[in-house]
Length: 540
Image (cartoon, rainbow, N blue to C red; front, side, top):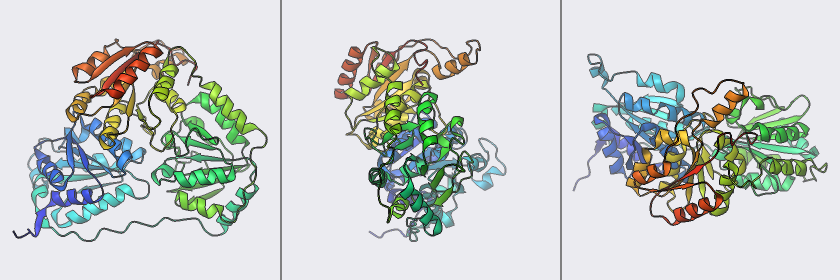
């Protein structure tokens, strides 16, 4: 049989995404994207029918964190595309390569037809790295550009409008060669010499490590560098686990907890060298603005992009790759003893005491029990709320991406779809999603998707019938209780209704039994952990 010399424009997109390693796409189809779905499946990319585009995009992010390949969101024209806006903006801020394939009305049709017609590119341009409208003559080029832009530098989402007839338009089957990926860059010149001198002279160095280092998979280089030079490491929440958090030099995650900051910030302000490795303060609250003084302290910034945020300033700035920079920085620099004043040990002890695990029941007891019962290699996700701040301090990660969350945009309702994406891509790993009860209610319908796919994540819900973090802030401002409380619901019953298992627990013993049962279950499990209102007071 003769091989056709042409394919559909949609096939050109799908084949390029498959070549990049993509194996899953998520979304809700409409008539305008049927060719896209068909092309993705033909290319070997499984289309997963979600119940909402916002959740679909978080599922796509979950697969990215396990496979390294860009996530794919498929959305139909108009309301479908707009439903995904929150998660696309989250991907932009959290540096997630997400390809957004949106159906679109043909340009000539839109001149005399108004139903569901809007300027989708105008919507997506501010929250993506790039936005394209597919044209047949450049289908292969646009596909390659989209992958390159989404994955290189600081990763992020790329949007492609796919007009209805363009998806079916014939294009040459043979694609031009893919553009070569850039090689890692390292610092050089007089500033590098200065940085080496500062490293050699440092008595109290600290590293602050963030998103760029995680994206660049700089963990092994970070571990070697920190051990060689005796440098303690603070990470942002999204970069947790780049240095295993049971390591003697790990100070855990930072960014949102005022309680943790009372111990971490004094250590940073006592440091005589602060090395920011891939640190992007987009994850940090306002309390991290200008917490060190580059006129008094030596501060080195190694990032993927110039500092346009002005959250902090540095004495030296390198736009370079993290691992390559550490190698260059260490050349010819002999190690020396650090932190001989005992401040590092005191800070680690103070952090441990600030987040105790001994309570009989409450949020900390739930987190401690889950960490003890679940295997060391369990993957965790968490959505936004008071529970996220506490969990991000207490949940130890031993590998990068061991805890996935929305850190820059802090969006609610992401834990369940992130857990589903992680479980889909890593079916042999235990996966647990930690939800607030309000976040759970936002996306409960996706449990039916988990049942349909045969996924088996464990969903732990902190049940206090309140927007606990907002209520805490409300009380802190001595305001009346308004708009933060809601009714208690039977979350375990919801889990069962959607085809999973459900447990309600109020003690450590009940939680241990529920977790052990869930690990052996042949379906997903919802564990409703009931806690008192105000349970987070003084803990975050």
